[in-house]
Image (cartoon, rainbow, N blue to C red; front, side):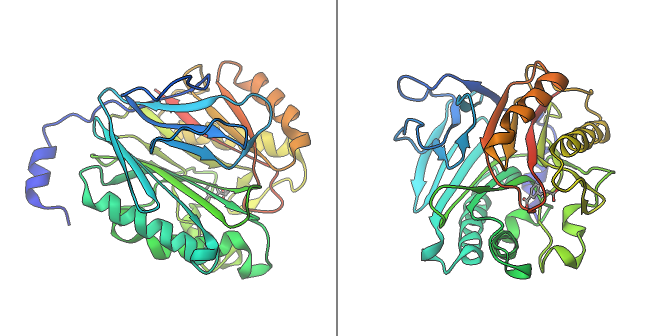
Length: 328
Ligand code: 3EB
């Protein structure tokens, strides 16, 4: 329950505009004061000693820009154990990086990361988590309920706690090829609730049947941010109903993914298509497929900035997943 005073304060205030998300040349100097977070991709990315910087453990396939989140306010930031945070203009970025070896494996590490993030988010005004990213190694290793992704899902729900009691955020969960025990989780939260958007073509992930693991994945297909100006789009793949479609067929998976993305926009009341302000990220299981993925994106979303990275999708038969943002 939120205290009544909070409700009174919130009602007359308009939600503040969403951060801008852009792909840019790597910054030459320190991060600007209105940068909420900045992400480099892969081993070659320059490390910046700033809590707002995260070196994402996914190798770029082709161009390697830096992803920058900018808010319309000065940003404060700091560290708290293995958590890093920044806040400004009603927005909060928080990230945890940890080693599974310190937490007994993928389940314990996910529980640890989510507990840290939940506790931190619950302490401040920006307590509404809108979007979260998860990168773990060897995501498809292990059989049946012991597949590492499924263990991650068990730990994620265990650690979520109160901060996620109002519903799950939009999310991506991707396998990296850096050191196997590394878990990276980072989020965007804000001081007003957003609106979850599901996809009528897909069973909501938290309602997936038992065959996908003991714990259904805890994410929403998308979140419309509080100012109603931006849809955060979860990792989207060729899942129809709850089943994977077109196992092993990249072209068909891409077409199905596009239908899913279009259906999500339509259901969220967002104009169709992905324009120059709609940064997209494609996670590709086989680096040799990157060119076809890029050609598909160029054909259908020619204006949308695209980063392609080497990342494994959480179901072994899926070859590609695409997430991103769509400003109204
Ligand atoms: C799917 O639709 C594909 O576990 O957080 C997509 C986005 C997927 C997020 C997650 C998983 C997650 O089920 C997989």
